[in-house]
View 1 (cartoon, rainbow, N blue to C red):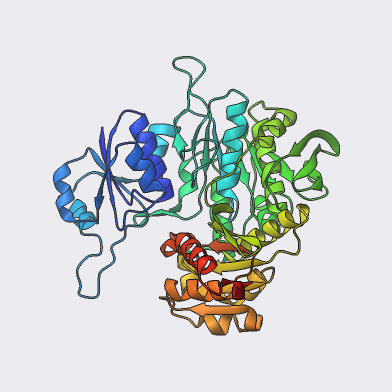
View 2: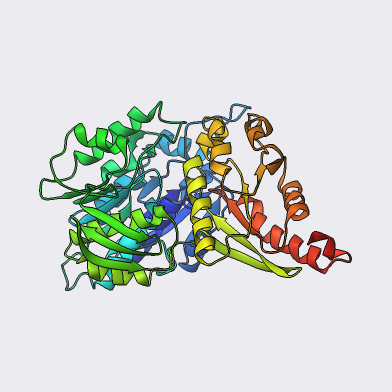
Length: 481
């Protein structure tokens, strides 16, 4: 089968492309502004990518067009369609489907699907769970919305223990809508036997009116879990309690709260796992933050449903390396008598931003480096942030940082006014070059520069590293100290 993927560089669609290629299909695709990390993964797989959504791609005559949710019926200011290929597909009656639907029909059917849902932590928890099952010998398939360092790829089919047997499949279960022609959340297509509900708060203001609307979609997911299935839910989340109260037909296991089935005792980097109050495992690993401790409990509870004991899961987590763009160190630059570290992180929701900042602070404190500053550098890039829906939460989100720098280019709201409660600790820049200059002027030896965005952020990481190196070598560099 030849499939042509519209929006192929998105993390989900790029993973789908990798799975289709591994399954033996011919895969091509298109996107606007071909960008990493998916572009790098797809190039390594030899998948042809076309820049833009030109109608001339109809001449490829694939068996089916697989449409990502980046595609719409939108029009440009001059009236021309933003996605002319989609218009040509509709006009000619060519066969098309959504990414989640194609995945459900061609990959997930007949497997034990373990789906990880939640506003935050989906990618990391999915990667943890896939790693646990891999270490336990299950050889699972997986599709992660990022690139796990332990695997080096975002997706694989997995291998059954013998011909004809299909291994479990671990998937990041996104609540965002499926496609412009299917407004259900992606995850309702996956039909999981094990469903993780990590957390739930308001997000995606471009498609959801309020939190209740998202809770309704999460309950639609629960309706697809069989009676023999397991739902693993965060016991600390009132929103998830409301979802569960709408109806539950499966086994429930909770984590996080004092009265949950799975709890943690100890620091996030070294803690005991308790099952109904009895210690069953200990996790000692390189990850920091209470959020990752909760992610680990969720993954352990989900893995148990396919026969992996908590102790075995904890051993796997001890070697877990994490995911690209989750506190990923991009550069270390010698400056004065110290090192400036530049990080890349996917955090873009205010809660995720604060959680990431707190996680880095906890890591530094545990290393005896609590005196070192964290500098937040971010861009409000997601659809929700661009709308300004959560601008009032930004001062709270950035509170753990010593300084905060915002790239405000293209926003329809006043970022400086939103960050005013932070006073002189916050600065706003209209473009990346100005932002870099502001940061370099304020940086000190030993600082940790945390760049947060769900996009490429204009290559800010490399630009910061280059500018810091130049500043360190410049005459009079001692003034920076």
